[in-house]
Length: 285
Length: 247
Image (cartoon, rainbow over all chains, first blue to last red; front, side, top):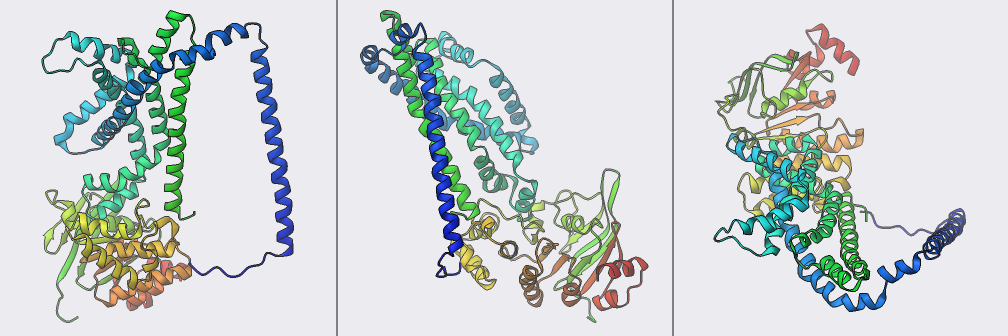
């Protein structure tokens, strides 16, 4: 942490900097031109195609988007976003619990370990749409007392179970990637296995698996549309309902935009968070 | 040393193998309080494995290890109880990269030894200051130099007030200048009466601080003696060869 000394760049350094500046400008210009040309070609190719007017009318009609906007937005906020916000922390909890369970060694936990393996194998292997249907239609049909008939909560449980299995495997891979010397080091300090897992292994594991976790969460956000199979009027269902009455599917494109508006910032935010954590640990800012 | 001092750790007939490969055999060792025992020998001679057996990081195949009069090689012993009393420092530091230096140092005192957070922090800060790391206590380990990281690892081990310190080639990854700053701490601890077993390639240092030196060869303690005797007048031919090569 020595004080910064007064420094005047040498003539050679100033020369180098001006050359580098020139080259940076050239590169920016090339990038701009190439990008514009490529996108222009794509736009021209699509809009000059023989069926473009029909496609434009059916999928990109502004009046239809405007007409369906309130219903699609309502479905999106009430179901897709709400479900995503509630399900995501639950999935993370299920994933961590299952992954950690598979790494325990206590003989008392053997049944739990077997259960964890069976659970991941089962829910990772089944099509999500089947689990959603089974929970949404099958459970109410059982007419159990004390079990909710709310489609929202039943399908939410179905999604949590399906994604919990994926996330558990991602976290397990993260735990396996932490070098065994870290566990040795924790054990040498007399930490118990549970303490070592919680304070030493898991924090490092979770940081490493942030990108694949974001992948799963973006995928979850999209899969909230699956609850439409049991008749929940989420964004996409509301949009296609409009389409069925007006023979126009522009609201579905609108619903797609809604999804992007949520998922893209989530990805950027997590990128920024993990970059910040990395900078802190490596001490370069 | 006319009267026998209190024996802290003893090893009798220790044997350790990985599959068919025997890495330690017929190890006998006795360590009293305030002893500084240096393990020397070529890489692969079993020094690190022996240290890891002593705090039960490695299961042993045969023999008896006694710590403070209690057999710790008993399978019914909780290894954590043993490790509470024994500190260890590794060649590759093994600091926890997601925690700051200070957090590394207070983790075990708080979580294992039930120390109050403030008390643990005060003790850690005092040790960090004494070893020239006060300015880095809130830094993460990977932003420090190798010598600073290893000193932090030493402080982490000392924070729990261990009765025995195991040092596993703690300067092997450092350049000569950084070696000096780390060994200074070890020297100070030896002077303060800390009981230590260290595997090392620093022969001059071993000669200076050791009360006893063991030469390991092929998983056996081939020769053990006072540093002056072992370095000055080794009995075994293999010891002479090793010292001739390394000095």
